[in-house]
Image (cartoon, rainbow, N blue to C red; front, side, top):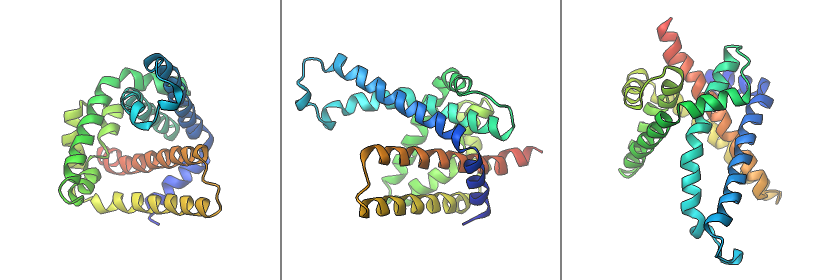
Length: 221
């Protein structure tokens, strides 16, 4: 366990309620939105005929619409907690809404770059992830355009790939062990799995923010 992981975990633990309240609120909103849209778009289709493949395009659209707002708001929430600004959930979410066009473009560009890297024997994709994880933070916290953020993320993370990967791999190992344990105990219910995924994702964003502090804020002071 690295020093940055310990610092991020401590931050996450003492602010657990605020961070998870935001994450679960957005998660519930996305589930309700999907439930509202399914009858509207597939009203003529019997419920028993609806499967994952049928509603997959809808899930992808909702994901593309909501995920960048969720990401942006979560970044602002973590930043506001770290800076003791005491911003509420709706204030953070509004920041995500206002920066939505930039976050959508950043999300699409970064996803495409990493996916393209994964096509070349996976390792290039992992390397690209380690160089581009700062992009949404630069878009939200520095008001940079997605293209500026991509260029600057590469500059800030030069020689830093293994450092961030160590923390993320450690987090993934913990998550997989929890999943394995719950599966052995036959407690791996869908609701619990979704909850664990939200916790895992929230913790990951705290880890990214701690590295943002080290790479960006420290270099500016």
